[in-house]
Image 1: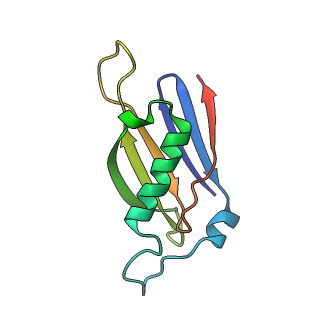
Image 2: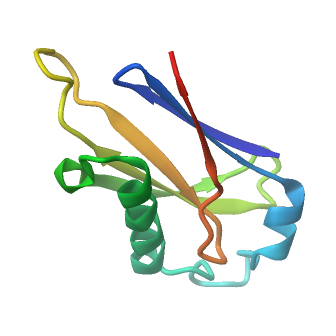
Length: 115
């Protein structure tokens, strides 16, 4: 149902989440002032994922956290983005990883592959 991909340093990180995962998570409806998961809890879950996925996680800094809808706007999630150090000897834009966090605080497992 949802998919988030980040590519940098010769690796691809694919986060996939199913309709069942979204259905099990709390909903954010029109009559709710705030989403069911606070920005701070989403940030903590995303930081835990970065620590698990990236050996140089201490060098990755928060870029932003965005409330992101799926195409039908009936399901939302947090997309928490971090910027990291450029690859050794490289110049240009710093790499970015986007971590999706469902409103129950879960981060879908990442499939990591080498390019």
